[in-house]
Length: 180
Image 1 (cartoon, rainbow, N blue to C red):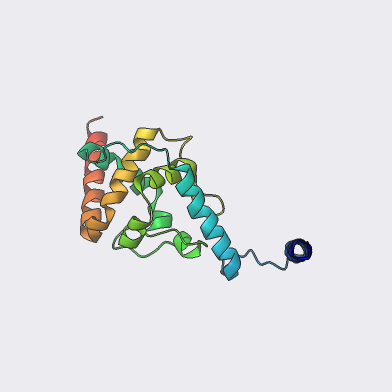
Image 2 (spheres, rainbow, N blue to C red):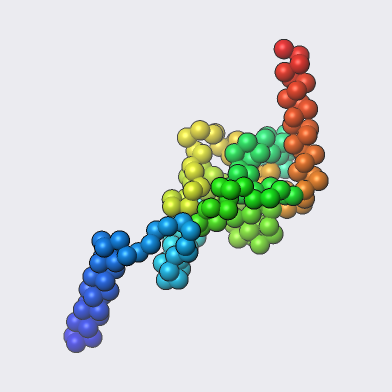
């Protein structure tokens, strides 16, 4: 019984200190400073466990059709480089100011961190307090899967491959505009 009382008192004191730090404004929410380590651990663990749990029942379709990958590139190129960067280019001012930083999706370690189902879930639902928007209301599932298909190929592209895709997209757009 004493142990239970001690645990309840300890938790109450911790909750009081936490509440006081929040209420007083002592906890600094500025994006220019990192979170306190315990807060960073808590937020990162909550994010990763939530994404894993909520994406568990997502069925992954085939992600290898060239037109699907091309569509994914077009969507990615329009929406994602400002935060996630693109091969061969310096980070944008937005990317440099994000906290937590947006992952470099061309990085092999980042690629291993998330499954295809998790990437889809993130695209569809976004992630609170990270700057990652939810695209599920503005994009259908097929389009979101095309972005996943492209992102999976991003590490192998490199700067030259990405630049070629950009030129091809610009050329196709110019040809389309010229014929109207």
